[in-house]
Length: 224
Ligand code: PRP
Ligand code: URA
Image 1: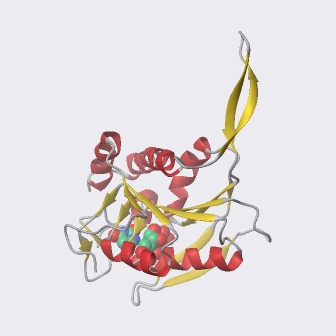
Image 2: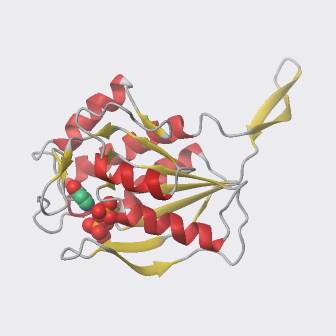
Image 3: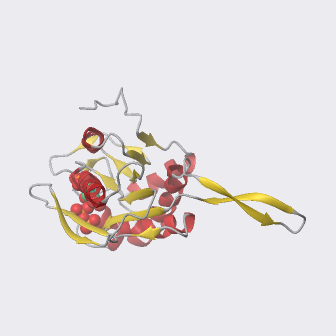
């Protein structure tokens, strides 16, 4: 179990230290932030994390004619699939599509049974064949890691296995979730804005931000 503060973080975990990320994350955590602002900041943070997660994506050269001369420019060579986990992952899609306009979006519906904390799959919009080089799973919260692990297993069963790469993009991760994903899928990289302290007895991330789906869509109590 990763202690707190964690001493030996897996090399696959990337926690952003960018000042803009830190600033926006505090707004997101604040219980006074209303759904409209919350959605806006989820979007902005997603863009920044997506930018970091794409740092090792492959590019190929593309001949470009500037007003002055011809040159070799670049374009993304990786075919990218975005996999938002419903509901809360929906808020991360638009920003990612701005970064990667040619990406395809495949929705995956998973909710966490609040009694068992186990994920339940209810929707799957993956295409018939694997047509990508890189899958980005989008979900604001990595808590027990149950939903993320289930999503990775769905993708691998579907055919997203080496050389296809899978990355997880979360806003906030708990040590328990990082450990569960890393143990089950050491090949999957995790990009997040923060690694928080622990889960509470209801499986909520502490200090966290409450329920990411409820806070985006104005439903429920939004707390633990
Ligand atoms: C939340 C969150 C993750 C999951 C994380 O979704 O968006 O998908 O919980 O918890 P885990 O790591 O313990 O699996 P939730 O089940 O609340 O569904 P929602 O997005 O529809 O609100
Ligand atoms: N899902 C959330 O939305 N928040 C948590 O803290 C844990 C799971």
